Length: 97
Image (cartoon, rainbow, N blue to C red):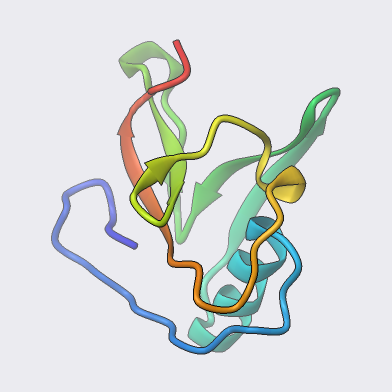
């Protein structure tokens, strides 16, 4: 995971007890001691900030995630993962627009 300046990367390995990307992120946040903000919307949970870096609508930047290098096109609590999946959160230009 990288912050908005792109200079920080945190890697968490073997978080295998999670059933979806949101649960995995929350497990990593607990281990790493960083806050995660989220909103429960109609389509599912949307992550609004990680470690103090907030989604910026006016700049069209947001936290988005990829599973095995593929952009995830659904809410993070709706994307099931299994052992061996690699989930990467990026603070980037919104891919969903």
